[in-house]
Structure formats: C-alpha cells, structure tokens
Length: 425
Image (cartoon, rainbow, N blue to C red; front, top):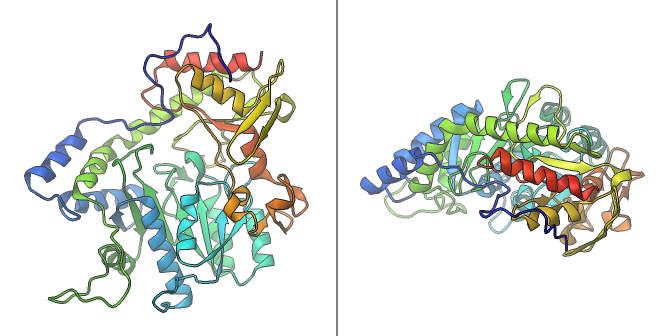
C-alpha cells in the first residue's frame, strides 16, 4: 500500500463529492414539518416539479424517490409506446434488445432488466467518454429491430447527445436520456435532460445539487407526466375505494426530501462554478504530468461534477485487476490509477476508479457489445471486441476520479495535486 510519511494527512476527510447545504433546505423541510405534510404530497413536491421542469427546459417534471425510479418509468413508458401494454407478470420490453451506454453506473440499465429487456452495450467515444455515435450506428446495422436506446451523460461532461438523438430518429427508435450526472450541463445552450423522448435527473447525496435522495422524470407530454404520477403512487384508479387495473409502484418523493431539493436549486449555478474552478485548478496543476483531464466536447458547457484524469499509455506502470482487487508494480516516472488512489487515500482524501464498463461486469460478460466496427463479447479479450480497441475498457484501465468536493479548499487541492505529482517521480 502507498504511504507517504512526509505528506501530512488532512484532519478532516476531503470527499469525492458531498452535499453542500445553504439554509434554504432547512427552511422548506421545516415548512413541511410545521404544516404536517410529512408525506408524498405537498407544496414542496409541487414547487420542486415546477422548478425542475423550468431548469431543464422541459414542460413537465415528476418528482420521484430516486433517479432509478424515474429511469424505470421511462423504460416502462417507452416499452408500452413501442410494443403495447404487456400482460401482468411481463415487462414492457420483455425479450427485446435495448442499446445501452457501456461505461456508466449500472443504475442506467437496471430498469431495462427490470422490464425484461436485454441490454446490448454500445462502446464509448474516446473524444467525449460518452456513448459513441459511430458504434451506435453500427449497432443499428447489426440489430435493425431495436427501437430503444438508453444513453447516460458521464461525470457532467456531455457528448453529442444531439447526434445520438438524430440516429435514434433515423431508425425509428426512442431515446431515454440518463442525465443523472449532468444536471445543469448544456450542449449548444440546450440543457441536458431535454434531448431524450424521456429523461431523468438525480438528487442523490453526491450530485451537483441534492435532496439527500430523489430524482425527476422529465417530459414534454402531459399524458406521460400524469401517468407517471399515477404509476408512482401504486396506480390507484379514480374511485372511492382502492381500485387497481395495472401494476403500480411506491416511487413518489417525500415532501420533506422535496424541500431539500427545492432549497438547493437556487445554488445550482454556484455549485457548477465551484466545480469548474476545481477542474481548472487540477488541469493547471497537473499540466506537466503525462495525463489528460475529462474531455470537453465542442459546443458543450459541462457541469464539472467530477474531475477525472486518464494516464498516458506510455506512462502506465504495471497494474492488474481481478473482480475485487488491484495490484501494481511501482516504477520511476510512471504511475497507475491504483497507486494514485492509494496515495490520495493516504492523506485522507477520497478518489474512485472510473466506472467499470458494463460489458466487463460479471453479470453481463455474455451480452452483446458493439464497437465502431462490429460486435463482440468482452470475455474474449478485455481490450479487443469486433476488431477495434475497446475504448471503455481502456479508459477504465488508465483513468480515475479525483476528489471534487466543492467545499475543498485551494490549499487542500494543492496538497492532493502534490501527492499525484509524487506518484510519477
């Protein structure tokens, strides 16, 4: 394990990304308490939906208990629109292939599996770290019957989601936009969360703004918004008794949690500015090292949620990982994510590996995986699939997420930068 006895650790941990409270949150939580609206209805829920829709440039938002629930309802809506209402006990995309982002958190595609779908993973674009439009086009050539795409926007640095949308429209497919990490980011001035036929944002505790939990489904279709509210409250029919004609879910947000998120929204731009400053300090401080930071796609304005780096191939020391552990051999002038993460941890700061691509996960290693030139299965080789380098696996191998908490001081960040530099000595 990496230990630098000559570098003084922080007395208080520097987090990857933690909630930043301002006071308005407590005001609206107390309001819910005083009015006894300690339930899944109330003024905070109503106001949060108005604010969320306006912020994303959408007509309607439905506030739910988390972003995964929002994505689940998105998949359910898309499936029923594409294939009709399923029989009870069957999923909305039962037995259907669905194209999904490969390098992402598994919450992006879990709802596809909930609804019986079969994820087909689309490789990552080197220039943006997001879904590769060329690989997506190749996937439609291989599987022209597919009519649903689920695309995540990674670390708050969006790619060309507009091109992804155009490809979907060309092939008659619906697009679900997972903007959990990209709230407040834009492409050509248009908000992330407004490109998909259905979209979701997150208020998880580590996101750019938080409710401690929670999320929103975003749509321009009033019928979809109303149906989401019905489905998320156990699909109760409009009757004097408890009447049910379809499967429902207990997905509505608490009025108390909604108060936290409501109080956070006025500070979204402030949080983005703080995150941007962190990214720029890392970029400047690490500019002489053989690394590059998250790529910024032309036309985008990220929200800079997590600052990440990737080490140049020739500057990588030997590193090997199995499904739970990692080992490396230290080498002068070189480093690897495992060494840097241990170095950061040794001074009481939190970093993380890049998202491990879904096609490398034990439960999905036998699923189709499509690159720019064709399809393959990750079990055949960790880096080659379909005859082209596996971009997502390569970024995972060489990349890591840096401490990006917007309460981190300049002095704390400078110390983290110094520790990273020493890894390459």
